[in-house]
Length: 527
Image (cartoon, rainbow, N blue to C red; front, side):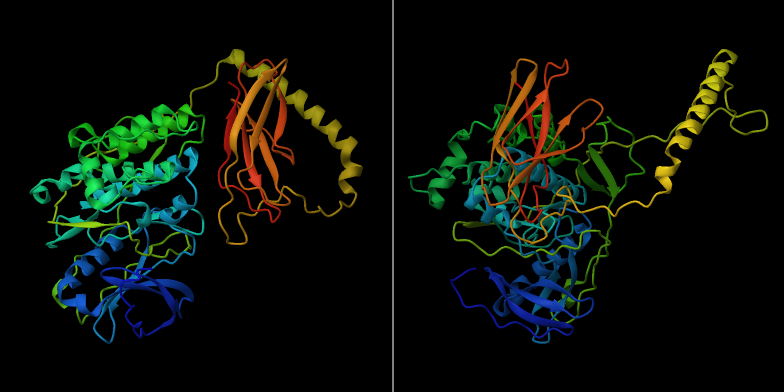
């Protein structure tokens, strides 16, 4: 929470009960309220009284942008907006008690697997905003919240620009800003979506390194020093053995000094991250994209279903002249995600620089339009005709079915007494899966996975980064036919027969005593 000023008193909102202060920033305070109908906890962002005259239009633009984009699973949902009885504009949003990504990376760096997953999911949200004509311009770990289902949710579109935006000034956080924003007159020459591509790459780098890209331990890291390094210093290496050189190369391209050398779009960055997942034998995270005209776009390259495109929901532009007294129309979304998200508190190292507005054109980067399946050829009466099977193939099929029928009768006769006998009630087993029922911190992935071939077996081992009493591990072998049945062990090593294979991979989940477990497996392969 910002300690530079006392928070303003919470407003009285009909249908809402104030609970506590969540955080304070330079333009607004964020409070926790309980909504009466439907009953749920929500985060309410309230503009400061002394900012109403200068920031009301920008605040209204943020409400419109978030309402337009919040159907995306990786963007914070806005429930409604309005003006309180004392004249302060407010937004009612999801609330989530989980720490945001800035709090998490300061505790410990992310694993490569989780950083890749989060990066792809947020890149899909950024691409969706770009296709709707919205440039975020302040992507950083503190602006990525985490739902109760451990999904990232992008928030704080307060300085975002749209093709209809009339905002005159914006702010960008220095540690994650591209070098062009610091050049003289750069406010009118920002690089469009490539600005957000840079900030997204810098955010992923931060999750892996545990610090912003050009923050050097043991040296001065003020605004002047950071700007000097951002403009001239090559991207420092990530000194971690589990971060492959291919991932560093993706981040280095996303953060190139020259905007033209970066990935042209957020979805291009997401696909590059998917290739790293494939290289590491990780589960590939799908890219969820909303597009304004999915039915009008021509089919393009098929990526095997790794990109999912849906239509975008649009809303009418609000009359910003009436924001100080008239409530804004509520905007809701149908979603299976019932988790709530809390805006992140401001932090001291998020220095900002005032810049002019930027209008971004929608990105013309269509993806995966699947053609309809061709119908079967029509018969003489206009009905699709079924091609008759060759006579030579029918008799073997009839004979096989007859043999199977006789065998089935024999099996049924032998097992009928057992089927008629009363069956005992199934007892609960340790394999019952409950995802984090305590609502606490996410269970970490196992680390230091290693697989070696010894004689006719593959021997796997791993470490528990945060051991607790009662921990155990669920694992299964991967094969071309799909995952094999899961097994449970309390040891940090398992032995798997090679069965003629030259390489074997397993997926390992860490389980707690309360049956919470990691939301994705750690994949370990021999070699």
